[in-house]
Length: 492
Image (cartoon, rainbow, N blue to C red):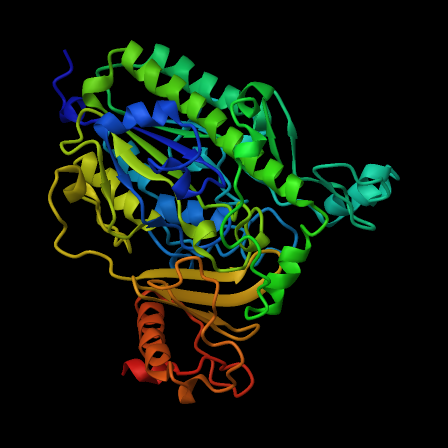
């Protein structure tokens, strides 16, 4: 019998979806998640969990590193021709390396999307789904994107007549908002690979498994079976769907205009398909959990259900994700379960972030790392105790994706302040305006001389302090680029 200390360490499985709003897992959600609901009997759900940026790569890099974009170096989706960065800073160490060195067997299937220069196999993983799509995202050469437009197909030129669920734009490929697909994103293969590996797992060695399906990422194309679970007549658009956003940055309105061709009925169909996609992912999750039970691994296996970022899902008339700094794009799924969890079937409302999972996973594995993490271990919550310090603020960092724009935000329970270097700023009273409908800074030229000047100053102090502590090099003194209402000198 293997008597090594590794044997007593728990197995850890991470199931991470893409584009899934945290609200979809709440008990009062209209989304049907029967497998997750059963999972919750032995799990803790965090309903105020957030990602640092509104798109994949920075978020996934934060999950693996326990750091913010300013610290790990991934600011945007790395496999694009005009990316600001193609991979992690050289000195960034991802937690899988620590697990591997301490005897964990490491298995990876699904979406990586962290670096265009390194894949999961470079950090100790065995790829259990042999597909280059999942191994490493290689940056496309200049001609790659242009070839799409040179074939002359109407669907690529934008010459097609618009049909329901499609958006036609001159000179662009047709945008497919939703549709039917019996195997969306090939996600079944991801879970098949994970279940197959569990069939042959060595129970004498601890393992870490990452299962990364790509749903419910747009286009919201789902198997008919799941769509049939939702009646279009029962779909209600969000209460802030009709927000004209006249008091918000012009880029927000321009982003919303991308979806203006969709009728109200098509908007409801978009939401119906999104819900169905989440239910499809729930079925895949259930298959994985059932396999753990079937193989007798329950007693020593911890399972996490996460998403990398959210989706606007029609709030403010927006879909997918982008620069508009609204909760729906940043609030993620976050639940930790399994029999090793001491305080199951409860919801924690304290703020947490994706940066918290690297130290949490190492803590669960009993590994003391020499790395400094920006996140904090969530282990106290799993043992039904409180951490010494809770996060009273939520911070976001983005310089935009393929459309650049420096934006930072800080939120408390009461206030949300968004610094937009590309347009005017935003301030929301979250207690009285939880749907972020009224920007209290709209129409004000000088935020230092308005009725909310002290609130803005306090929020700027928080932003600059966070920037200083997390090596965010956005300090610039030049008169036409130093656009924050209060400069970094306010923290000293």
